[in-house]
Image (tube, rainbow, N blue to C red):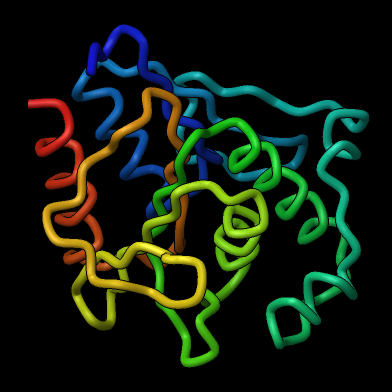
Amino acid sequence: MDRKNCVLYSGAASGAEAAFGAGAQQYRIAEVNYSFEGHKDARTRGLRVLTPEELEQGDVSLEYVSKLMHREYRDTPLFKRVLQSIWHQVNSGQEVWVVGRILDDQTVKGGTGWGAEFAKLCNKPLSVFDQARGEWYRWQGELWDVLHEPKIEHPHFTGTGTRFLEDNGTAAINALFARSFD
């Protein structure tokens, strides 16, 4: 895959998104980091501050997300904008890479879980590095399968995940970029 045609779509937050961005920068891959007014950005390369109208495009019912994710989310303006920003990240990429934790109900923990569920709803290839298990998993429509030697296959890809990135999550992102672009 020609790196000149590749774009990482992410969210500029600390943790996994910053690590995906660092990987993109190291391999000279373009970045689009969706953000919004008032967001604490850890990355500025490729920063794209969404307007209120653009954020509205990604609006989703918190009641729907809570039901889909089997948990309650806080109904705050900040959290709503985070979900709207995640919609843009997932909508832009052809495949989605997430670092976090897969829960027993097959969802991914936290706000990042909405990105994973939205990728499932859009039938996009979805891979999650589960930091607790130390392995990559690929969503197969009904369940997660271990993904050995993961590799980015589409030039426009989304990289997102937890703010609480652990050493094995960082290593997994670094290995993913090396495997895909070396």
